[in-house]
Length: 119
Image 1: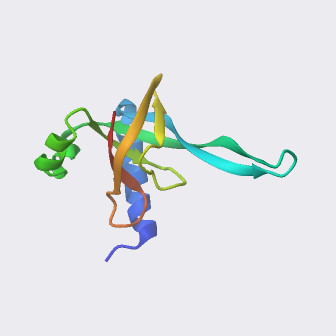
Image 2 (image 1 turned 90 degrees about the vertical axis):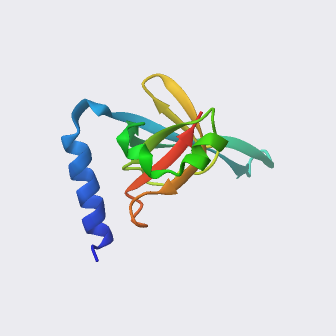
């Protein structure tokens, strides 16, 4: 069985060889933090660079029933991100903001690539 390092290395090599179809993006996550100075909760946003591969032949791996249930959504692949993408995170890519409806690890638990449905 390949190690997590092997899986991540393979994903990185494949994305590097894919050329312009892989886009640079930013995953944004709304967070909140307690502000001790004001004594209130401050809303913040954390940003994480990532690489995005738009819907392609790879999306055939998601069950058709799930795509029908999310008929407004479309598939993207998220890689090289420091955090696991979550529902309601947003992706900024090519001047567009996409909201994640669902994201799942697509790299055997290695966290190297995620399959996401976005709107």
